[in-house]
Length: 180
Image 1 (cartoon, rainbow, N blue to C red):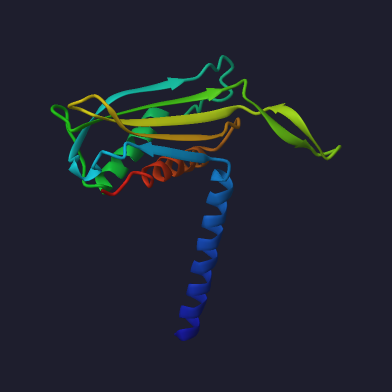
Image 2: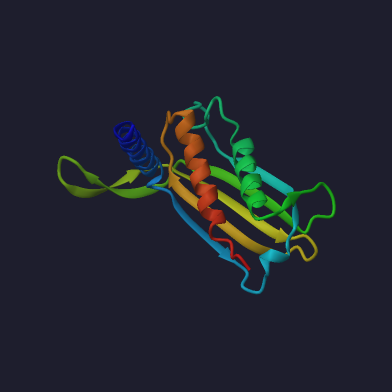
């Protein structure tokens, strides 16, 4: 029985390491930043309402837009989950806070890459994807917090990779909301 338990522990550990490693490689290019108004006490907010969302993408050949994933719904689902973790409730009227986001791809983004043959840096077109989430006080209309995530846009990512990347970006942003 102890040997069986040992084998199960080893297998579980290997699966966990594989899972964490695979997530890291899928999300390693994503950079997340957030800024909060230092005068705001976030613990005072108990509910929220969605203000707006926007996808900014020009993709005439359908190369970058995921076919079977509604990015708006994915972002909203994860934001709702993260706000519920903070004890907040979504309402349709008289919210304490408004939430809005925008997602997009800059197809003309340039970056420096290493040329594998010459082993020298070269300027290359590397499309960048971005997500911005903002929170605003419903009474004053002032922004209280903004989160920004940016990563490389790659064609033909799997649905699982796209969902993992969105989840990672939103979760990392919300970790940066002050707990006060």
